[in-house]
Amino acid sequence: MGKRLRVAKSICSCASPRYTSASLSSFACRHDDDIWTEIAKYLDGKSLVMLAATCKWFLSVIMHDSVWKYACLRDLQVPDCCQTTFKWINLYASAFGGSHSYAFRQKEKHIDWMRIGAFCFNSSDAFLTEKLICPSKLPKEDTIQNMLNTYGSCLLHNIKTGIWIADLQLIRCPVCDLNTCDGTMQVLDARHMELFLTEEYQKGNWEYKLVGSHDVRKLVDCAAGGIFDIKHLKSSTTADLFNLKSWVGSHGDWQPKAMVTCHAVAINTNLQANEGLHIKYHVMTSGETGDVVSIRISQQLL
Image (cartoon, rainbow, N blue to C red; front, side):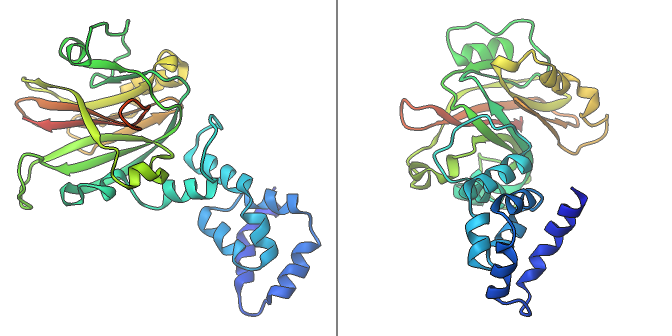
């Protein structure tokens, strides 16, 4: 493996002018496709593109969908848990191209963001909460709003299964239009991996809808939020997320923290003296009666 890795790291230098396309093809054709497919597993997306650009033979090998599928799953650190309707090279570019949901809409409100990671929905049911404590039982109320009022958490159904990507967004206060406003709102922003490639989303035909909100009108120590696949809520990997001491910042650390596991994601930001939080839950569906393809939990100081 060490020898292959050295070859993988140096192979992109073949793009140097001293190598011709013919010499590259002659060199590559002395080796089987599956050898180069194996070597490609050690390259990131940029290096794969550079290698594919050296000659037609490498282009045919590197552009194989299995190569980009491996790279995407490896760099997202998720298992192969779904079928896709798009090519993996396009999914890779969508995931690692530096874009986020606020880049498509509300650019004027956006301040900063960070990538948390990726996780999988194996079931179509989600548990959303602003209390990072594993519940002894799931909330049972007739509406999402009543669940939030009673438990500070809720259930969502019809989730699009597969790989989801999670970001932490920092947004300007939504109640004013002043660029100098110091008011900010943090958003746990999760989306299905295919969302940015979907034509209806790109056209702006799918929008976020508010499904519930409530106020916590008392001093709160932190602004936290989590999205969980209900099927794995009690699993050992998800339990790591509820072990707050392992990842949440200590008292006086005001930097946002985040953690992702195989089937869940959560954020936590310690807060200074305050009068409470205003919390909103938004979802985007693929059409009026389609699957949920994106979820946002936003939190703003009162």
